[in-house]
Amino acid sequence: MFVKKYLVLLPGIILAIILYSLSQGFNNVIGIELLGYSKSPISTAMIAILLGICFGNFFKVRDSFQIGLDFTKEYILKLGIICLGIQLKPFEFLEFGKIAVPLIIICIASVLIVIKLLIKKLKIPSRMAYLISIGSTVCGTTAIMATAPIIKANKGEISYAVANITLFGILSMLLYPYFTNFYFEGNSLFSGLFLGTAIHETSQVAAAGLIYDQQFNSPETLNVATVTKLIRNTFLVIMVPLFGFLYNRGKVKDKNYSIFSIFPYFVLGFIGMIFVRNIGDQIFTLENGNYEFWKTLINYIKSLATVFLTMAMAAVGISINLNELKSMGYKPFVVGLIAAVTVGIVSIVSLDTFLKVF
Image 1 (spheres, helix red, strand yellow):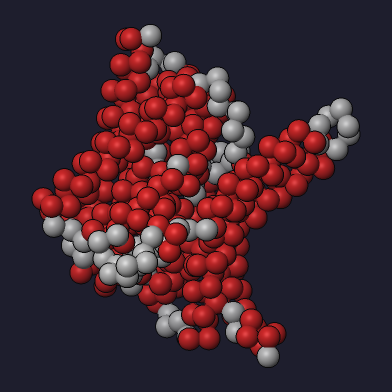
Image 2 (cartoon, helix red, strand yellow):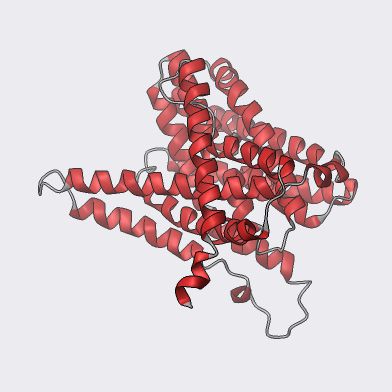
C-alpha cells in the first residue's frame, strides 16, 4: 500500500526529468554550439519553462501525470532550494559586504515601496504584486515559487509572474554588462555589485558576469556579481516568511493565527545547508587530504539543486495556460517593467553615492 501510494508520482516526475534533460540539451546546443560560449549564458530553467508551456498547451496532460507534476512543483522544488544553501559561505563576502548588504536592502525596500504604490494605481491583484515584488528583489523564479504556496497564488498568477521575471531578466542580462562597463568606466568591483543587485535570476547574473568577463577580460567582476547575488539570495530566508505574514495577517480570521502557521520551514533546511558547507570547509582541508572529496560533494549537491529546480520549472511550465495569461492583461507586465527599472536605477544611484562619499 505504501509503495503503491508513491508509485503514482512516478509518471509526472519522469516527465519532469525528461523535460529537464531536453532543456539541458537545448541549452548546450544554443549557448555553446551556436553562440560559441564555453558555458551557456542561457538559463536552463528558462528553457524548461518554455518547453513545459509548449507541452502543456499542445497536449492534454492526463491526471496520472498531474499528481507527480504537482509533487515536483511543491516538494522537489523545496528540496532544490535547500540544496542551494551549499553554495553560500557567510564569510566569503567580507571584502565587499559592507557595500553589498546595504545596497541590497536599499534596492529591496525601494522596489517594495514602488510596487505598493502601483497596486493602488493600476489595481492589479495583490498576490500577483507580491510575486513580482519578491521575484524582482530577491532571486527571481526561485523566490516566486517559494512564496506562491504561502500566499495561495493560483497557477495563472505564478505563470505570469515567472514570465515577467524571465523576460526582464533576459533583457537585463544582455544589456547590463555593456552598460555597467561604460557607466563605471571598467571598475570591476562596482560593475559586479551592479550586476549582482540589478538582475533577477542567479543564472542570469552568472551569465551577465560571464559576458562581462569575456568582453572586458574581468574575472573579478564575474566573482563579485556571483557572490553579491548569492548574498541577495539569503534574503529569501527573511522575505518569504515576511511576505507570507503580511499577505495572510488580514485574511485569516482564526484567533490562533501566527507567522508560524505560514512559515516556510524548508527555509530552515536552506540555512542548515549553509552551516553544513561552512563546517565542512573547516573539516575537509588540503592539509588533511579530504579536500577533493568535499569539493566533489559540494559540486554534486549544486548539480542536484539545478536538476531539482529545473524539474520544478518544467512542471510549472506545463501548468501554464496561455489563454489565462492573455486574460490577465498588460498591467502586471507594466509593474514588472517598472520594478526592473527601479532596482537598476536605485543600484546605480546608491553605488554612485558611495563613490562620491568614499
